[in-house]
Image (cartoon, rainbow, N blue to C red; front, top):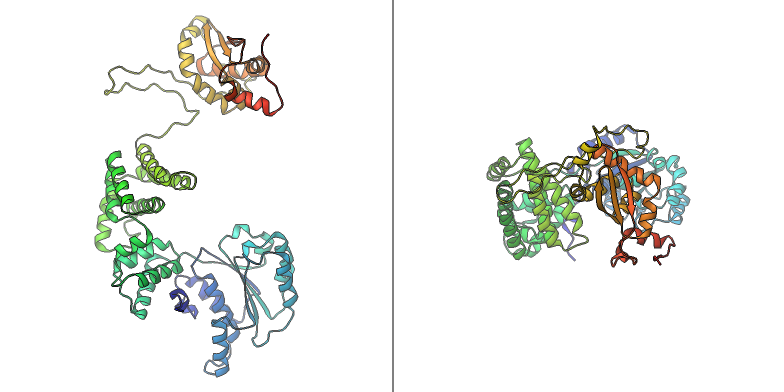
Length: 522
């Protein structure tokens, strides 16, 4: 069986570890000075070298001071590198999560090493341990025997208890920069006799997102499937991504706010076999690259021709357009887990263009007058500004004064109240959700002077809205919104029976869940 490239080319010394010099240099200094700790925590994303560095550290700390040319030393080095050394124990915490597994370690640490100086425990994905397992490990981790070293590796340090974190020396592994991934891939290609052009290696490095192991695995896959030199088209086909031309077309469509052109470009990419999720990820990464180039022209790694083209695309868009599009496609990517991916992709494009032109108002935003559009023959009826709703404790607040009842009546008419009714409910919902739920079962009937009549669709809503505190919430909001003081009258349903849509009424549903029964008028 052929050995995978990431295993075959796994680093065997600190100098071969890519992109983690800040960690490897510190560990080398500790070994050289004899100030080796008893517990280490390696934190970083997948494929950045945590387990590899732990193995190298286990080998170097045990071979320090031994003659390198001695056959016994070389035999021990090979045993540790190949995972055959009995005193270097690797444990996958994802499959050994119970307290019994940790108790077994705790019982064995007191035994002396069989052939090495230190017994090294490497616990990978340590955040998967249970709470009881962490508690069982605490005392041993704090005061282990002098011949034991613990190395914990994790991608999610937030799940590790603080009592464990405080007992370890913590090292953060960075994502490997794209240019260093490209250099490493070139070394592998030269060593394995693989032909790959620079554009293909750069594309692999960008899609690896800082994981050198992912990049090497993809190169291994392409080397097996490609009969000739690996090209950027081969990489795109293996990843299911779209071509750079599609991204250029989307950029042009976004800059001109051309919805149809962008949808056509997405459809062509889907017809060519691109995955909607991958298109969304690729487009977000492309927008991020354009934003970086706009803010710092030297931040990305591309060929000279690609760099000039991307800078030209970045010049077509402003920062607001880029960030709005990234937010829209980020939401679309998250929603693809629960809905049709292609539909979410298209909606993400529509929302990105709409977000670049006009932000969506919040539910409690003031109602403002919209100027009539030249494309409409008849202007839309103007709405009136409404201030933010008053806080719930409105009894103690001074209401906005009205000059007179006549003036207030002129300001508030039944037509205006019906037009603003949905906004009024939304505004009250931000401060008093129960009253807003009741108001959804009421509708404005008439306005006479400063008296507002609401028609309740059923007795439940009428009885609850008759309560003084609920009326006061509505009265306070209307006073702040329109000025003046208002009296609220709740009218009974116009029919003796419940409305036909009573089964869908949210208030009745909630009442029935609480044990209430429907009551009809006699």
